[in-house]
Amino acid sequence: MLLSIDVEFEGDVQIESSAFALQTTGSTPVDLTFATSNSSRNTIASLSFSGNNTEATGSLVDGNYQLTINGDGVVDSPSNSFDLDRDGIPGGQIVFGDEDIESLYRLFDDVNQSRRADIFDLLGFRQTYLKTLVFDNGFS
Image 1 (spheres, helix red, strand yellow):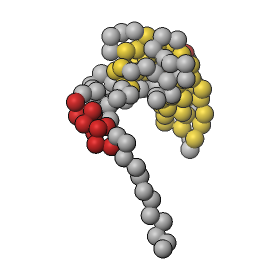
Image 2 (cartoon, one colour):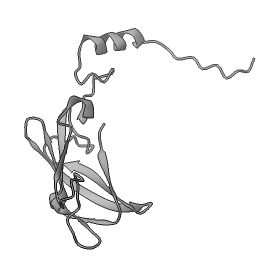
Image 3 (cartoon, helix red, strand yellow):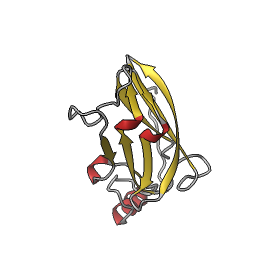
């Protein structure tokens, strides 16, 4: 299950609701809420999901996702837009999950994390189906 995503910003920042957008790679938006906390002089935004593309548990449904972070929605302590992409210009945008290597997805049957449920996942399941696990505590 994918119940939340944590995004950490360097320093003490204020985060507006326009800072985050989550959608499937098919462009279906996911409703987001977030709560912030501070840790080691950094700000952490914990994103939670609701509405379309979520289960009753609050987990995202199976699929590939893209998280967009907008620097204009993040303000640092002198009230400047956060330089999100570190190009020297306040603002900017980062899209996470638009490349396979970034692994922003939830696929329940994807045992080997190949981003698809296929025969290799089935074979892995088949090798362990109805097997028992025996623990040896080291005592005789």
